[in-house]
Image 1 (cartoon, rainbow, N blue to C red):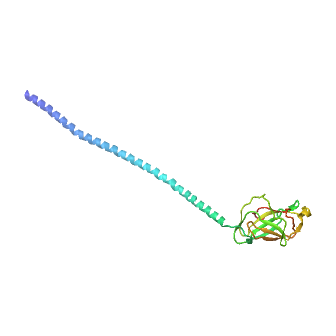
Image 2 (cartoon, rainbow, N blue to C red; image 1 turned 90 degrees about the vertical axis):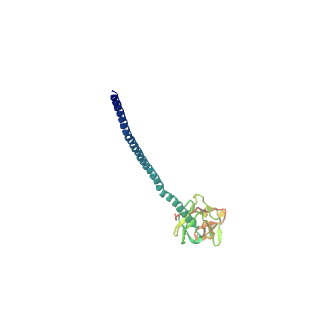
Length: 235
């Protein structure tokens, strides 16, 4: 009976020990499975980060594109002032037309009427360089070496502008010449002219034109000549 109980106890102990060993054998397998699963999750996370990093690289690349696209604009803005400065320097280098560079003539202009004639005084650049005209000419009638009456009075109807004349180009000034016969002879003292003296703007040397057929008033208070600023062309 004692043996029998010892054997049952032994069997129970053996059974318990065997259960304990089996449980110990399965625990490492589950631990490795857990480790493998964790590794897989971490690998997936790392892959996801790499993908995000790749996405972040694209905006960086595209962000550089606007800077590249702005380059032509920057080049244009730099070259424009340079071109403007060159044009300004060229304009500044062009001086006023001198008397020796110009030839003069009178044309019919606007014709005549109401006791006055309206010829055009035309100045042409007969030189070899481009030059400019701006403003009024000085105009007077002469007989021999003597000026007849007052010089032309300025008519401000037209606004002055700078006119660039290349060789061969012309500009005109509209004149008004009042007939001396319109005035009382005692006040006017009519005097036949033989020369019209022309002073280009800003010049002290004059051009002489034949004025045969014109009559001036020797009285300086009787105004018969009027002149406008130069305008482009002959008419």
